[in-house]
Image (cartoon, rainbow, N blue to C red):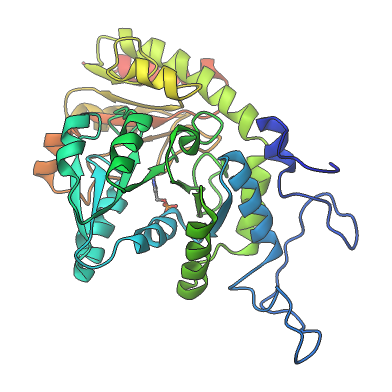
Length: 387
Ligand SMILES: Cc1ncc(COP(=O)(O)O)c(C=O)c1O
């Protein structure tokens, strides 16, 4: 499209923000600039495009696109969600402190406890749904609060605006890992957060064929630091993955609608099925945090966890389903099923897993965009098969 995309609606920006036709040929799809370097016009004339670790037009297009969708000023694209989170953590130095939602993605926990701890970066793991617990966790050394809402896999909902207010009073910045919902459903910067991170591997790319991450900032000064840190560490997203991710994002709005309507049909099955002890989904009216979720997001997402009571029963469900694939990850067009205790959260010590409620009977599903009836039939058959 011609002109400024900033005033357009979400679905239009998903397709057009950062995607101006390529100036030489007019190509509608942003080309994959598969180059490591660029010719410099003259020895004393340095162009913005000097070396592709610093800047690449395909990557820039994706960064502008996601910055627009999250209502940020700028973004950086990384080789994985964990690379984005690692770069975010450059805001916290030795003997400084960050507060995390207590059941964030296991890889984030591992990064802090087994890697960044070696650099004396301190972390606390707090139930951020409890605002008093958050308040007391902030110390003069705290630089960052890092939230997931909903959390993985317990689906706990944190009041993002309330956390931002408390943190900002103490001069502490707030980052939200928005991987589970995508900006179509929730935009944390609008709720007061300073940064959003995504594993683009999930809903943004949406097709389970690329690993990537983005970090979106509200202030240019922070974004400039992250750009410098990215160029320095080199954890860039490759041009082909930028292309795939942009292509995925173009259908984000329609995919998310279908993901969520399919999820509602699956939740209707789970909540009444006798083999299911508990169903964790923020869309259920009696789920803690349901009202907060209604206020701070436009939907409830496509991630559901449910407890079937024991490892053996979970094993049976995971082994019986046919349309759902047993796999880590989430957010793709295909439905996936997993066992958090032995898969995504295996790096969390057992005692801590139990305290968080990640039991051996807990199963997590990422609902895809297949026909809902096939998904419901598949899961029903697996649950009916339990004694
Ligand atoms: C919520 C969340 N954040 C971050 C990550 C890390 O992303 P990646 O696997 O792209 O490094 C994941 C991966 O599963 C995740 O689920």
